[in-house]
Length: 203
Image (cartoon, rainbow, N blue to C red; front, side, top):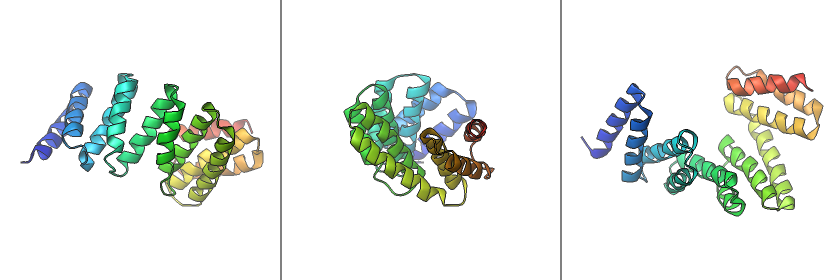
């Protein structure tokens, strides 16, 4: 049995016991020992989330996300770079956040890229780049519209986000159409379903 296989076995054992500290420890070993492997990248991304949300260690989470982003392993590298941008945005490091989110936003037409573009709009506004923020927001809306034409949960998720953007802009008819369409897909996440229903009640 290889070292990687042994660590993956240890991870499964830790997950079964629901020992969050042990899970994080094994994931750190996986990430540090196999940083360019897909399993190592996945471990790094999930370790970063643990450090961010459970331990609230923003600096450590940022370093793990940064290392995971370098792995270039899809989808974990892109998700890690977007999360890194979000951490930097939270820390008030707006220029650094813009740098990372621009990289993440250059991917293909899918929701991960759309998420990065949405965060980039916020980072650009905070950095004082209002004109670029408006340009990127138009790209963000166009990307959501493109993805929203697809069937399945990704399309429904895109229509939900687009509907919420339209609501923010005061475009009531378009917002109602998009949110209702998103709710028509039973695979829309429950939190998005609740938010869409609440939004429709105010339109």
